[in-house]
Image (cartoon, rainbow over all chains, first blue to last red; front, top):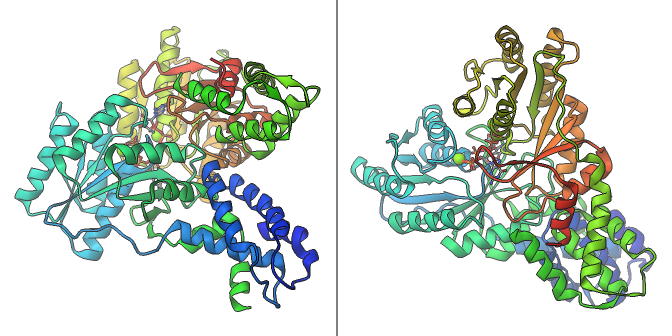
Length: 307
Length: 293
Ligand SMILES: Nc1nc2c(ncn2[C@@H]2O[C@H](COP(=O)(O)OP(=O)(O)OP(=O)(O)O)[C@@H](O)[C@H]2O)c(=O)[nH]1
Ligand SMILES: Nc1nc2c(ncn2[C@@H]2O[C@H](COP(=O)(O)OP(=O)(O)OP(=O)(O)O)[C@@H](O)[C@H]2O)c(=O)[nH]1
Ligand SMILES: [Mg+2]
Ligand SMILES: [Mg+2]
């Protein structure tokens, strides 16, 4: 597998024997390795660049603590900056709005929207005692509406009855109406997957937003996404103004650099992560854990923190 | 296509007639990295490009052409048509891959192609896990006029595969395509289930499954290399389909996969409709990455 960043930096910087401040040359040498590590983790190239610039600023001239090696010092600075860029934890779905609060799920095909809809609905029902309605606006993919119906059965969450031949926009209106009449606290709209360059479908998505006035618009994206993460996040954000991100398939062995890319280009918080196919496989986002994962490293940071 | 146009602008922006020096090579490497080739493969391509040309003046078009050539060299050996051995009746195609990569949709598209070619096809609904996976495949069965063998949600997938073979044999089908549940390659238990499906099919015909097709999503980054590595080891993947190339992702990881595994790439998926499955062309794919029109 990957050589850890610490090992790489060690061989470059350990000649410095841990005294004094980091010089411009030391930092540049280290940042070349940081760049490699981030690219291998699928962080988008432009984001890698702005990230290394920020680290350079902080690292040049930084005092190296006596008890640790310069390589470890750089890793700590890199890690801290990564955590900061990934954003604060605990920013979860906001339900602070008049009922029914509309939550709209968007994203590319197969990213995990329908599954995540079920997971979020189950969580709100069980943990917050909310009355939730789920509605499938996916009239395109074979059996997509049936999928959400079955998930509703599995989780015991209500789903909007399917009416054949209704357009996604009409279903959205009907869902909000039904939630009002039914006294639901939350209505979650599961939309069809779409590529961000499919113009008619991007227009449709904006229309759905217009008629349903969502309080939250969550972009559901695969954590295994490569460099395209910035394009898709930017495009979805431009067209509907997302309020947060959900990263799925975090139970895989990917390094998850897409998290940093999408957070960096949209500035929107990562609200939840999907960690499995089952309906309870949804977790809060912890920037520190994802930072460790992107850098592919273990306990170096705690080592530095103790120093 | 739009993506190749963007890329062409991209290259044109960094590269008009100038010396092929370190800076220029770095810019070219960046273009490849943005297409998800990964560091190692991107450097291999730029090294090949630089050899014999370093320090010389070279135009943007020349660079693109050479870049496409270098990528095509890697891809050409894996561009192969899917061949069926119809002495096996049915020829069994098992479709595997990570969640949401396009297995079920690809099966629908492939069935349509085979039926159009005059073959009779049976589909096996081996995804007994995901909600409405069976119904999804059934709709593809209706669309393509192929009977679907299915069991219930939560049933044993290997058992379904075993039954599907029997039904396909009885029906005299030429081809049996078996869908499986999506799974991440690091889930040992789920991968063991896949192994079991392969083993059980072998009881009917020691050579079955004859084709083990893995779908790889073009938006996936470096993890796709790992996906192919492990699915190949566990399930004996012997062919690939790259899906979702109709977006802006260029699927450059396929170049690394081709270099490492040399597995045939039979088709690319370019949409959600039944005819959005095209043969894989090494030269078209390479040109799209290099930004040649
Ligand atoms: N391992 C794992 N699988 C997931 C996760 N989230 C979703 N999946 C799986 O990913 C596949 C696609 O999920 P869906 O919820 O159908 O995705 P979607 O975005 O609704 O797909 P479309 O509606 O076709 O665009 C399914 O097999 C899910 O079980 C996750 O966090 N981890
Ligand atoms: N744009 C585009 N979408 C595709 C393509 N192939 C499949 N899809 C879509 O991607 C989503 C997932 O496809 P599926 O065929 O359900 O994927 P799967 O691998 O069977 O998913 P699971 O069974 O849940 O693991 C669906 O919305 C498909 O319509 C393609 O080539 N291009
Ligand atoms: Mg869906
Ligand atoms: Mg499927």
